[in-house]
Image (cartoon, rainbow, N blue to C red; front, side, top):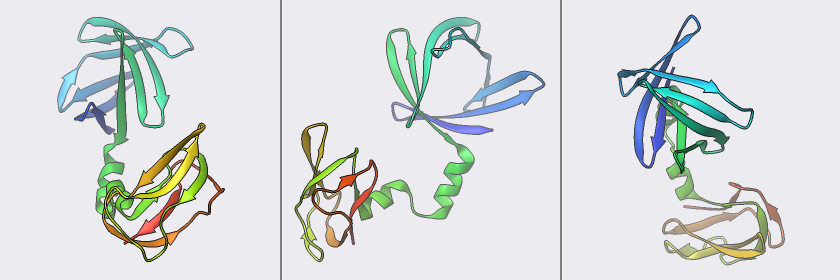
Length: 168
């Protein structure tokens, strides 16, 4: 199976194949000696990469994988190559969706709605104020457009990634 792993804006194609009880790895088409042994239930692992040993903590997070290695935390975004290809073929990518909708960045309460349906907005203009963790956050228009629909009311609880406003 192939995966696209993004680390600090660099994309790496990781291919994993299984032969019996052994897994084989290729990074960007080049074979690599790689083995993982679990040390503790907290996620600590011993990695053996091309004959060199490393201790690391691996934690699954919504974005992919958090790796703590040699005193540094690295966030690895992981996506199956097949799913990424299908998403591209389906047409509308996540960035395009975000351009048509204003979404909550985290759970909270709608404190104030700053726009109304039919209103023209400029990129960066405040649209909705959401209170989260005792802080008010003004969510801004990602681009110019016309407000199509407001899907929330002041005082309403919202979830992360919930669409608050759609616009054209």
